[in-house]
Image 1 (cartoon, helix red, strand yellow):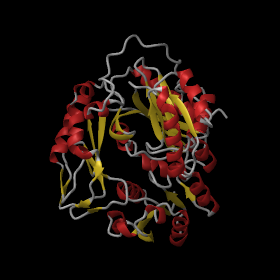
Image 2 (cartoon, rainbow, N blue to C red; image 1 turned 90 degrees about the vertical axis):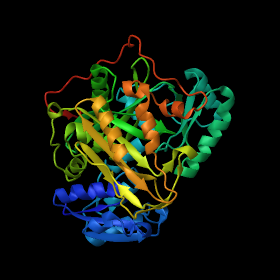
Image 3 (cartoon, rainbow, N blue to C red; image 1 turned 180 degrees about the vertical axis):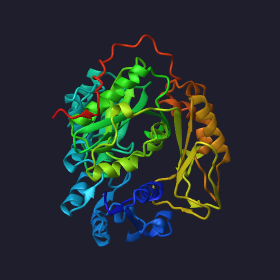
Image 4 (tube, rainbow, N blue to C red; image 1 turned 30 degrees about the vertical axis):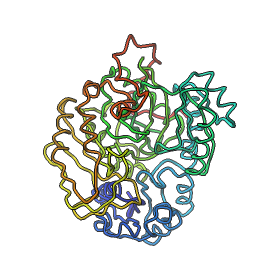
Length: 480
């Protein structure tokens, strides 16, 4: 195991990684911006290094400053958390060039998977089903129109280098496509410095189901079941649960086994998430792979009892995977909701301000991941995520009731500060959500967005599905 790990992030994920390191006897160092000088992570770390002003571009996205900080404290590894540089292959390569272990997949693997078009090609070769559409980027609007005509509308235009829900435009009619194509390319260039886009069929009544995998550098891998992340606004997730509800066990098993096969085939190492869309006939389609810890990782931890950050650290240190697939057991149901400082009544506009009161909920099987406290200043510089409330129960109904109870207890107040808690309550009250038969259109339906899909109907006889991968006697291993 490492002697010192540098945590290259902030907020609740920096604190989450710091705690995991301390539990494993690893010395911690954190970088921080001027805006985070009084953060809990800075207070609890063994060392803290200021790397720049509040601007993330001059602090948490400043690769040179982070690497220099790691060298100053004698760190052997860098944990990037999520967001910022967590999926930046160039940063991972810079770490390697400076003798630092980047806690994530190898730079070449990350580069191939961070490009969504490249990832689609790799997963297609590995035998994973894709949504109909282009695999390579489409170079002009005319070719985009040809792809759209072939797969049928609606389609979605996506940035090849996109992430975090950005760089996507849904197109419903041929007349919208040329403008949407140009707008998405311009947005992709501005956000990612890369204007390549591809086009695929947009599934209007789909479930967003993802699979957590762990793969080591010795060729071993396991999956930790599924999560449902269909409650999302503008591709930003609001509520997540594990396992995915209201889908047959055979379907979930097939998705999970297929995901692991794809991860091993491309040489993935670390903790990763493969995301899929599941249509009304229960057919699933590969969407993307995330090469980092996810915001929603706690729900998987709650149903498996496995600390994913501990496993990240062990894998990065070269330890063979400590779990065999047959040892992975899912128990009960876990649900997480994100508490963002946004006002649902004003289009989810951010509401920065100082918190006068901040009392998180407690009680049995209730976990709150947060970096906030009374007096904390919610600034305008970073993501609006303030806390995550995660609950566990033996069954889904009790888990949802427990989450409602926990949100009722959560006391957050400050001048001008609003949170997404009232909107999450609306989700929890929705009849389709309570039945587990909801889709990615749920939030738009609740907001009254024109053209939003109705609540998901009970499915008919499922269409034929790919045969499940053979279950191994021990851990999965790469075949090449």
